[in-house]
Image 1 (tube, helix red, strand yellow):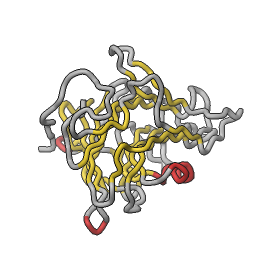
Image 2 (image 1 turned 30 degrees about the vertical axis):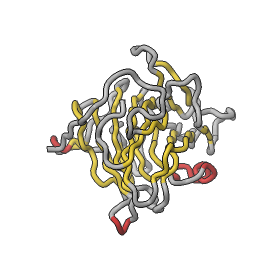
Image 3 (image 1 turned 90 degrees about the vertical axis):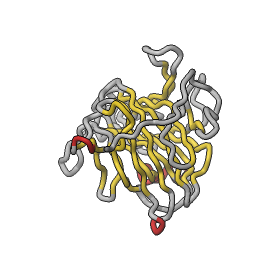
Length: 272
């Protein structure tokens, strides 16, 4: 049985306070008048004609819900190609030291396909994040339907990092890959990040999802791998998106983010 049910759920209105409970820390719930603490950097901007700061990363209000805001991230406005690394990052409210396990919670919603997005946690400082791009990630989640250089065509399922590339998350109960993410639907994601050293069984993460085909919180991947395994404190939330090249554009579909939280230990409850 691979379905786990959340316990001790909290209900009620969303809070603007950084502490929603005695445990969960808010990275951001986007209920402000502007994005606070976020840095946007377009570090491989090959747009033609050149457009300065082409990424679209902004607060929007959900049409179907009263007073709920989220952050949408797109590598560029629709039709503009060439922004290859649209980085957006924010310092975590607490450092995940080497030897510690933290659970991260994130809600995402696909604006539309085609697209190419990655998000996760970094152990690099801002200068290094902007220099390294994708290699600044450690635990990474990916949303894309782009074709790889190998010819493999991704299908839009949520993906995790493994040693030889990426893997779709799984529907273990049905012995198959998870289905592609549904456009316009919110998904709750928990990723349990083990920042122990390699010799102590760390530098990996487990992922749980609720939404779409998963009516309840469900384990969808066990032992996904940190990208670089640097064995350093984790200090930033990082998101990246990419239009693709002028010859092979991926598409500019956005990814909506809401309710980013973290808590020490393994905690499969919800902060909301």
